[in-house]
Length: 120
Image (cartoon, rainbow, N blue to C red; front, side):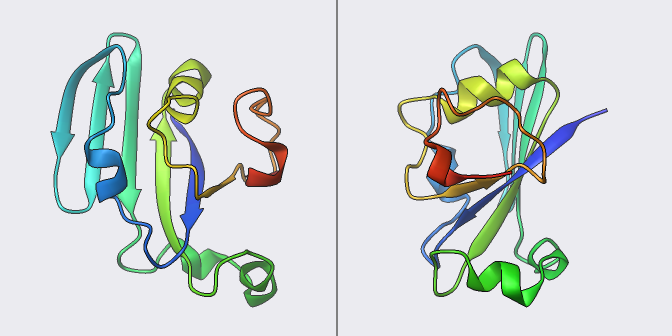
């Protein structure tokens, strides 16, 4: 069973920002207009662009108003194990202008991502 975080950025945040990442240790990358799947020897990561507004619809207006973006876009990042997530978020080419919503779970990421960029 996979776990997920929500990546939140401003109006210029798109899935294309992940298209050219290196994804160290990957076996295969499968890209489409709204998805990126990264297959590793020990699991997977899946980026899903919220183009239909399904994910953002789960947020209360008050939660959205607290975000530092006038208009925000969201991408769900599903992953099969915490090490894959840590490798992606800690990569040098991971976008710096986004917030990571950990859905109330402390994943111990504050050693690779600034605390102010994590929503727990």
